[in-house]
Image (tube, rainbow, N blue to C red; front, top):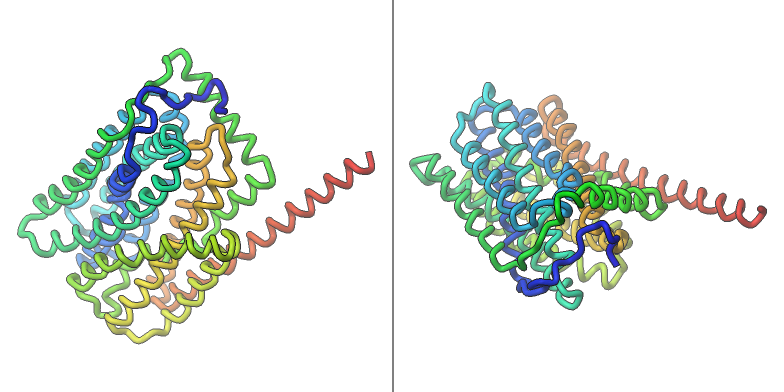
Length: 417
């Protein structure tokens, strides 16, 4: 049962949303990740902007999603989830248009950074509302189906948005037209919100109590050993797939043309969907923890091999497609671990808080690796990516050991008291 002060599921129309609705809603909110991560980053590098500065733009994109935990209690406690989605999507689309129309050179990087952060913040607010709709208004028997559609929608959209927008930018005569088509597609995907159940917000007088109850539930969770270990898993760069964030910036070193990069984006939609299925299959066969560890180490090995791979477009696209599939599989296994850990209560807020940490795990390695690239080259950047993953695994092991030691000390104290 939800805490009384936390907004409960709305009984009116509850559970009437088809599971496939969440494919389109997550595709909408994931759209700026693809646009900024592939189309914009590649275009900026080709325009002469240093990779380090492009990496900073990519990092703030992830950072915006890190602040999902700020939006989650507000979405759970005020307005309606539909209204939050519409507001967030409108901000996202407007900023995407501005990003693709603004001048692209080193002097405008601060403006582009602000616009990227704003677009991603709007998407993050909308994404929180989608999680709330799915968590509280989808019947338990259809939740797994809705979750599958949700994951697939995000992975496909990131690939299609990046590849499609890059193709538009390189083949249409007008950047404003390309921007309008890209943002318009995201808005069209977001129109699936009309298929969701109508929900009511709490009375304004009840909002403060709801916020206190929601944050209290989050605080109790993060103080438990399970909460601590799950939070550490989310914030470390082990299995985070960081290297994929710099693909647009380093592709030219493998002689990849814009058209080939656009083709890669289309193929990545298939690769990431297969990766989501792989993550579920491995979790069922090996268990979520074992699957998570196996995928994380496989990605480290793949990145190290990629560092000294032949500099050809075919090799680049092959390795990157495999890497994207592994990163998506790792994401799926981590999602399963998180959803099991958070339990009930303020589920959407706890999920948003943990996924904020997961986005942070993608953001800070980008800053580090972008700087390493500009100072020491691509090989050093890829080696540093692997090194960060290994360090993250070490932190996870140390945390698990300390928590086990602490639990043993607590049991000993109870037994001797």
